[in-house]
Image 1 (spheres, rainbow, N blue to C red):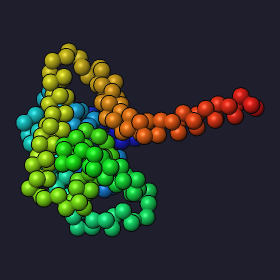
Image 2 (image 1 turned 180 degrees about the vertical axis):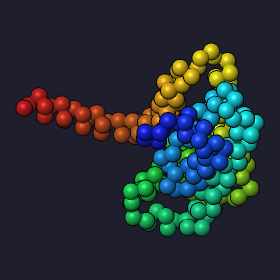
Image 3 (image 1 turned 60 degrees about the horizontal axis):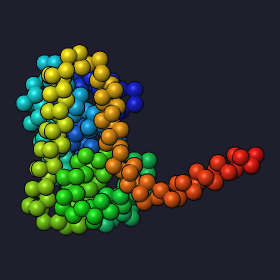
Image 4 (image 1 turned 45 degrees about the vertical axis):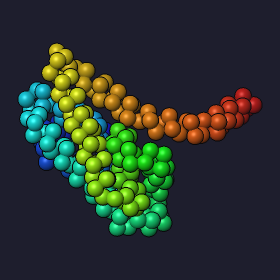
Length: 214
């Protein structure tokens, strides 16, 4: 979630246009990796169940934004390609994100375009890597549409259904959104642990020994 921002109030203020911009920016612009796509879609779906938004229109807007975002990321990768990997790190751009997305793409192939939708940061950079790899665009477009449908529409519908079926669900909305954020972070956290678990445990053990020796 954005620091200090109440998503419910934010969505009520910006409506469909704000949802479109954030979903598009997170999936299509390299600087949008920090945006709260999962929690935003879920909260918007919940607000639709409370008649603040129209669920059908919200799903269409979210789907178009997600597909257009990935298509834009693909175009960026196709245009700038490997030059992106040579860029210097900045506050909003880090080569490690591209490297992580490239590794994810190499492991999962075209399916990475779908799977990445559900992993923060990775979903921003996988389309760029896909474009840089020169994947045939019709093939990418197919994965893009399927991924956009499963993620943008699926998460939105989940929020809508929960809000429609559980009485006073707004009381539990913040914990639910927190749980969604945690679940979103789990896949990369598990991946990091699998790749670097021994080093992490060794570092923790060394720090513990240093504290005991003092």
